[in-house]
Every structure is written in C-alpha cells, then in structure tokens.
Length: 185
Image (tube, rainbow, N blue to C red; front, side):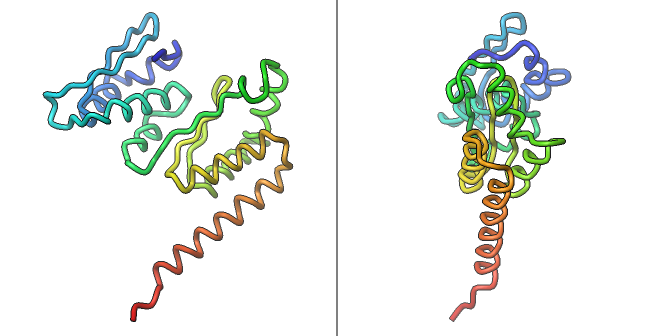
C-alpha cells in the first residue's frame, strides 16, 4: 500500500506512538518507508494480540489515515461493527477537475454544514480529501451516509438530502426508544 507524503507523519505519530499503538493492539508489524511512502503490514504471530484478520483491520486503519482521517477517528475501525467506505471521484465523475471540485463542494456544503449534518444524522465520520470521499461508521449508519453522499454526487438538492437524513435519524431514534421500553410479558 502507498501512503501519501503528507500523511506519513500522521500515520507514524509523535515519537511513533500511533504506529506503535496500531502494532500493539493488532499484533502486526508496520514497515513504512518515509521517503517513498511504501507501507507494508506484516503479521506478528508471536504477539499475544495477534489474530489472522488483524492485518486487514490494520490496512483499513492505515488507509483511513491516508484518506485524511485523524488517527483517533481511524481507530474506531478497531471496533468490529465499524467499516470504511471510499468514493473515488475520478471513477464517478471523470477526470474533470471542475466537476470534482463541484462535487466536493456539494458534499462539504456552505461552511461545512452539509458534511456536519451527514456526520450528525448518520453518526459517522466523513473525510473529503484529494479526489476521494471517505466514510467511517458502523454498518447501519454507513448505509445511510453512503446513500446521502450518493444523492449529493448525483445532484440532489441539499434540502432533499437533509430531509432524508432527518427521517432516517428519527426512525432510528424511535426504534431505539421502542427497544428500550418494550414491555415484557
């Protein structure tokens, strides 16, 4: 995997603490070439935290950091029900810088309000970085955030997307309320 030059320092962290934390929690070794940005994640079977699938989790965390998330948000991927979804704008809207800039602007919204709304109502984290849009959320919320971002990419008006998000959020809260106060017979 290749890490962007300006994201290498973020992946390593101050005094290497982020890299060490990922290695310790997942039982892997991260070989990172700070000159070229090549990142290799290897299993470390001697580590007590080692599990075979931890390599994929470490790759997801490194990929999330590479896509513009801060390490604290990227570490949410350690939880089993959280996942990372990446929209590649080059594949979706083409190579036109103008169109990519317009779509990124639509997703961020005026003063970042649209992005904040998606993060709040879909209980997710969103990063608009380079030519990608990335989402970290649990599986249910990831579906909602993915749908909202797709609607914005396809040109839906912001108020329609906000209404969709608000409806999904209220449905989710009503269901949580029902589950909490469900009578037992």
